[in-house]
Length: 234
Image (cartoon, rainbow, N blue to C red; front, side, top):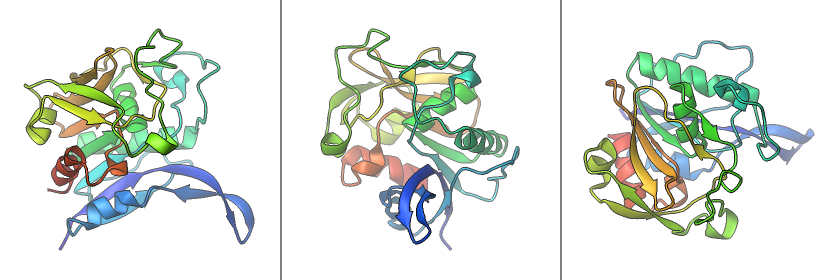
């Protein structure tokens, strides 16, 4: 029997029979990335009025990308460029992370998820990279560049991420305007881009959890993506 991989996602308005309504949506490549290994993907949309979410029966979870995290969670006021906030999604994924840590469920946190992992562990974010002085690289390259290499990332050798990918320098896509600022508790920085933006983190307290700022699901044939999803599904 294959493994169960829980994958979080958000809402998007879609034209359906009842009209233009909020729907739980996700890139189907996430499902493929689990099915390719004989495993089953189970999608978590934002939950309402649930303080606890038990992911202990899952073999692994993915906290996927999406809109910005409510900065009130990390003790800051919302700035103008912080957009697409979903409090239900924030609370859902924070509850998933809490349960995953308690039960040591393997966790891959991607883009927004990578940032939320840091916030969950007490860290903070830059609410906008350009406004925070990061101008050397344009990190917000969606649409035409979403499945392309946008910039280099340097991976530290003494990390779980390096053991998974087995390379110090890789190329990644980039679809984000926010990034980790203050690193959270029990987290180690595993990778950075050349302008100093944190591109990878991992938990150091025994929980098998890593975060990456790029989107491996958009480039399933890429060698780095293959290695990350092999690790997730193993």
